[in-house]
Image 1 (spheres, rainbow, N blue to C red):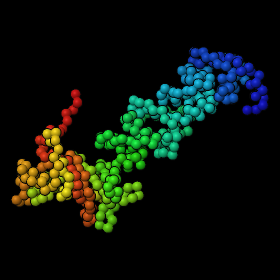
Image 2: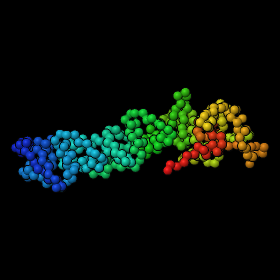
Image 3: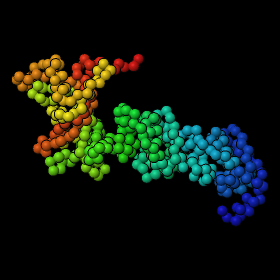
Image 4: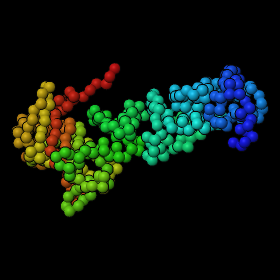
Length: 364
């Protein structure tokens, strides 16, 4: 600001009251308050140029209520993403640099039916800042509000993760939602962390849900299959949910139908025939109780189950059981590009009737 302007400003008494008419509403404010975000802004320039004490402006009076609060030295917090954008827009229009700088510290995001007020530095150098929120990185108030049609509760978990808190995964459904949204928001490290678990007993092993496997990460080294994660190789353990199995009296276990498929992985396929480790932990849940068996004891139980004649092999009978959840070690043969599973632990149902009893009705 030049010396002439400084002299002009000094000629106006700090207690001089100006009348500002905006959208049919009248506001009164002192010269001292108008100088508080300046000393040069729309109001001070207008007053020095016209010598008038009344200013007519065609802007939103509701937004200007907050502008007045700011000029009088009170903190300003927008109620939602739309009001924040209006404030930022008018801060630039009125030349209020201090207010604009303060507002740009925060980002308002509406996810579902919930509005979040977040500090921008939470996203510094993150992929979210340069994708979904890219138009707002140098926001002059003209960008539209950020509205994301996703689950607000899951977004809250994402934010807690960015703030350094541990996410408590409640159940498998919650984990799947977290993985899906971590992918959507481009939080790749969080996605990989949620998709995998390194065992405490054997840090060379990694547990992955079948839905989260990225087949491109499989590597066949020195006769065994390994999984690349965070630039380290692990022995993969796969978690399965809700698959149907036929047990043949020829001592083979075969997956029924197409229950298990690898997503985006034409190179590797899952072998239909699985092996159940002789020391596999087998959990049978029925009648609100649990039975724990080894393979040998469970095979005796299977002999008592209803049987059907095998259509493939003579002198072979077949019985069915369902795996609700299982952990299986993975091996591979380079000649056929198939992943072979050896079950280490499984929770099962013994009959189709029992499996049907576990189905849930839709809520009314």
